[in-house]
Image (cartoon, rainbow over all chains, first blue to last red; front, side):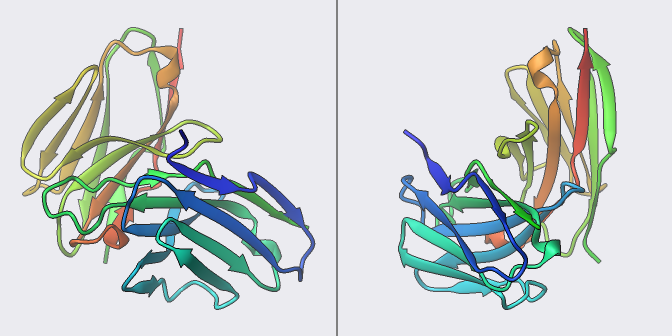
Length: 116
Length: 111
């Protein structure tokens, strides 16, 4: 059973297009995240979302928007794609409300986005 | 500012021991994580330290000194499959949104 899944795994598109990446977790976690990992391998947090609060990294362009239909899903929509958006995007989840546990994050397999 | 430093790349021999260091300067501390990331794959959780000292988990151990802002990951009896990047991350507050990530150390294992 896949804990955190993402689709598609690869996404190649033209500049200016709008695209979405889907993410689902079956761990019953309360918080989901989107990360961007660029060619230098830095993991940059983009969004954090639970059923009460959306936290947006202020450095993320507003062309990026998360949408959560329910607790188990957090999709990423990107409008007007630019060359610099090419990267690997990871979805992750954790049980942030637990005060006893380590609350480590579980990552999806990643979506490699290439903008031409 | 917030900063995490790790060596960019290390090389070690199969069967040997290697220590990957991580130093950090952050406002707030609520635990330090080590994740392993194989090329083209997702990061996976390895270890967590919130108190000073050594945590051992099989071939992997992780050490923390909060006063020095320092951690290391020790890998023993290296195997070829340990070739990966090792990411150090510090959680500054209650939420994982407040994680600061290092750039990772690429570990190359040679036969």
